[in-house]
Length: 322
Image (cartoon, rainbow, N blue to C red; front, top):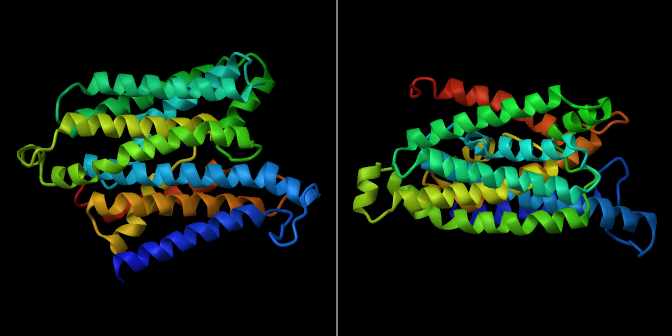
């Protein structure tokens, strides 16, 4: 199948997934015959549309950043969580809940974005100007471990059972009960993140030949690293700050798409953005249809899908991993 035809099909799947996210749920809503002011129209506008927009934007960000990180680090098991930015954004949001500021979603989001921004700055400082991807990976692992430990500390010191329950529920990750204001607050940062990652494709293609060869082709590894850090930090950090931690999208999607679009990062970034959006939209629609009175959290559903997939990749690449 030609690349253009596949991209057209992938775009159609993403649009259909967006439509499914609008109509699917415990109460199915037909898009035909909606009348302003009816309960169905209010559910569509106030509940389903914000979820669909967030799923579209955050899924695209996670998919694209996964493709970029796997290309930059030359590691098939890399995903946005590897850099510690997701964990740092989660730490910021958890701190806001711990301090009793959760009554304002804006403050929780602001704390989450501050955590992501702090992670970006620390990552740049820890990695330094060295062109080595190994130092970059190690810096991300250290940052992720530190943010996870501090988050666990806040959970342990939660002042009330209510705060503890709210923190744990938020960490599970979900698009539930998000408003249009939440979507409008996060999507500009997601858009900027995608724009920063988009031009890295050619540099990542060159880096696949080795850092010395990439320099000889005019690639600046430091500039590429800054684009990767800033793009991933803004987009993924903003998403985590609003929805909680939703993992494995950036790991799964590039591997599914490589047989259709090729191995080169420049060919993979845009399809991965579409694939990530489609996957998150379909997963969010599916959790609403799960039996039982309580809706399954999106982060849990993605972990149930992603963990076996991760193990499969680990088994598949066991001979090439150090």
